[in-house]
Image 1 (tube, rainbow, N blue to C red):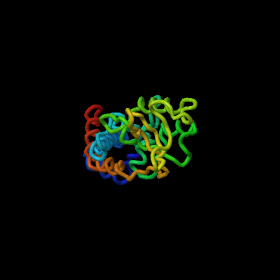
Image 2: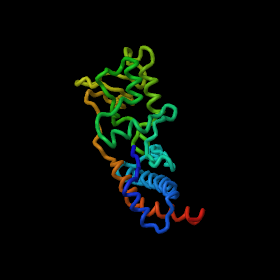
Image 3: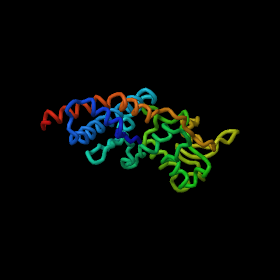
Image 4: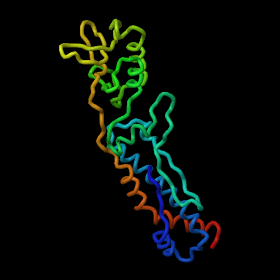
Amino acid sequence: MLDVRRSGASLEQIAAEIQGLPTRVIPYAAATALTKAAKRGQQAVIDAMRVDFNNPVAYTLNATRIEPAFKDRLWARIAVKNQKPGRGVRPESYLLPEVEGGDRQAKGLEVGLRAAGILRSNEFALPGKGVQRDAFGNVSGATVRSILKQVARPGAAQRRSGKVFAGEVGRRQTRGIWQRDDRRLKALFIFTTSVPSYTPRLDFEGAARQAVDAHFATDFSAAALSLMQRYGR
């Protein structure tokens, strides 16, 4: 989240450069310029996502929102949406680690596996080589729900029956979710005690701030002149 503010001496200096600018116009022009600056910053963040992320999905590119400025509230805000669509993940839940780094939160599959007593409290599930991914490299929600339904059904963990099952496999007793493919086993998810973490990749504030600083003065002048022409001096 980034608050866009331009007030005090910097705003007065910009306003002083416009000849004949009435004082009453300043807050209206400032609110217009701040809102436009926030929109510029939002677009800069989206452009940065396209560069920093590998083939980001539309859901990620549309994860930000704008809170506009008003004449009596001279700030605008670029924020990450905090509402999730149905069974989806809140954008702020997965974008924050990409901006600040740190450990990731438990995903829906992990929550379901723990509730079923399959995944231990200190374990995480990482995609294996055998799980199907979409064009963006993600495991779809439908695939996750199908896997969870098969391994979490009553008695599945004890019987290890069915085409897909959870358990320990091989001489190393590797824990995970497996799929029988003829006589071979494919790893759909591997359980690990290593906490998945993110390295900061997206400079959210830097990208937005650069766009704001580069265009605010021009946007303010254009808004002020437009108001003066529309309503007179």
